[in-house]
Amino acid sequence: MDAKRGLIRHGITLFLAGLLTGFAVQVMANPRAGLSGHLEGVMNGTFLIALGCAWTELRLGARTGGLVYRLVLFGTWANWTGTTLSGIFAPARRRRSRERATPARRGRRCWSSRLWSRSA
Image 1: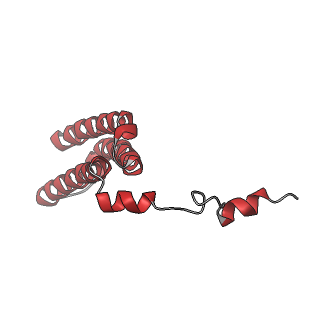
Image 2: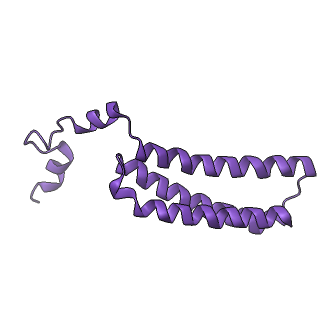
Image 3: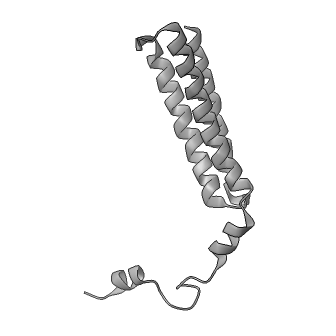
């Protein structure tokens, strides 16, 4: 019962952390990675809540259950932390590569927009 409560509490906390990350997406150095951090927090938090609700149905030994519990918590929190930090601290090399000229910036439309803009 203690692992069940822990998973649900961590799930709620991670869900709320994901929601708060969503507020900060526009001020991040890499907004796309920030959006990924927001989505990871919300989805992983929901996953932890669902796993916590089903925890008593799992047939795991004490040692295996403890290992699974710790690995799931580490994986979900590390996933959210990594994606959020990549949104905050975008490497300068990657930012420059995104800012390079694209077909739209050079005054030309890309091939997909030409396909959709043809008249029938």
